Length: 279
Image (spheres, rainbow, N blue to C red):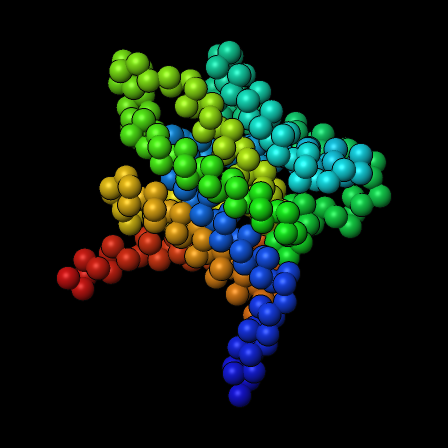
């Protein structure tokens, strides 16, 4: 049967090491992205993650131009860029969305100019923009695993503080919480997650990768703890589903993951109405 042979073909694909690395990478980055994404949307930093994702293309471009490992340069670049943008947001009187628009648009323009000086510009731009999770190496898995562990430990140990800052920042300040320190630490972790996830989903889709699972979880959960756990779970689950779509239909991996997330989000919108109708 065609269906049976297709399933066998997909199973055979997952016997290859590069596919196994891709799935593990998708799960690890999906967990980290979903975990931080739950706080990102509640703190209204969704556009910040979008701007950060676009801006990391500039770091990748310099890495390609200099012949360095893109992963080695994009992570410190993402952190420094995030800290710089945070500084500008705190020191200027411009509207947040306007400043972020300036930052990511100019960074994207500079990145394209830098890429134009490299011989890999025409051939590699698609991979940079839309990702290629099949290009993940073993080193990337160790970085993803370590980053997920750091995020889980930090958010777990400071959960009450993070919740207070997210829901009522003035009250957190009144209680003596170092809001600036925790905000900066969160931004650094978010920048690292965005930077390491670029290889999987690309520059143009990284914001959706962070935001969509968190939004779907928000539609299904009202309790803060459940929202975080479900967001991380949906991030990992959508990565696996996206990889299955990519392998089964021979589609690009990054867009396939985001499409899987979109399907989960639409299901989350429909489920409450369906549940009420049945009940």
